[in-house]
Amino acid sequence: MDTTLAQDEARRVAQHNALKSRLETRVDSQIAAQAQDGLSNEQQRIDSVASDIQRRLIDEVSEREREVTQMRATARVGQVVDYVFWVVYALLGLRFTLALIGAREGAGFVRFVKGITEPLFLPFKGIVASPALETGGTLALPLLVAIGVYALVHLAIKGLLRLWAQRRTEI
Image (tube, rainbow, N blue to C red; front, side, top):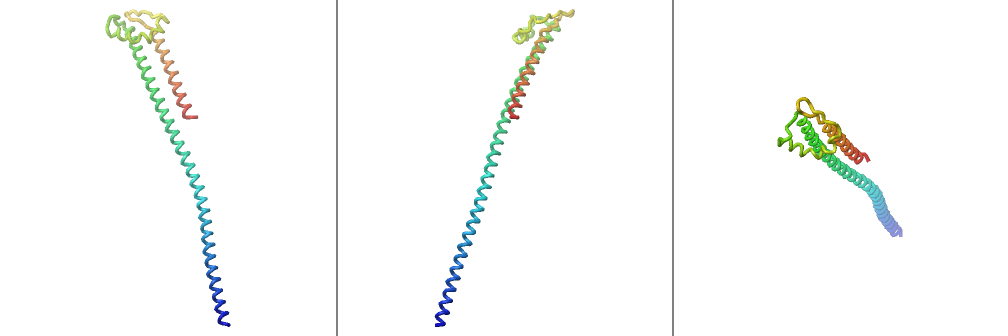
């Protein structure tokens, strides 16, 4: 009986230890799973924040690229405006110089220059007197007025372009 009792006690201790071992393994695995879930949740939050930051950066980069494209277009328009006005200044200045030196009206080049500049000069024709010089030339003051007015229009257009470009980049 003592042996049976001892064997029975040994069997119960072995069962107890096996059960205890299984429970410890299960608890350890649950703890590990919960820790992993906690890390997983934390990782999900980190991933979410990182995704948010990445999305904002992409939006910011695309917005900057759009602004740069608009600024390039504005700069190109400004260059075209400058070119057109410098051609106008050159042609009106050439007409002024030809009048000043008393170039012959019948010369082909003089007729060519007058033909090109007439639409530009017409609104200013007769605005002030053009005194004749002793050398045979004419001081065409209306041409100087025209050049001055075109310079003011040029400055106004460039100012508007500058305002438009600054509004786009600052807002």
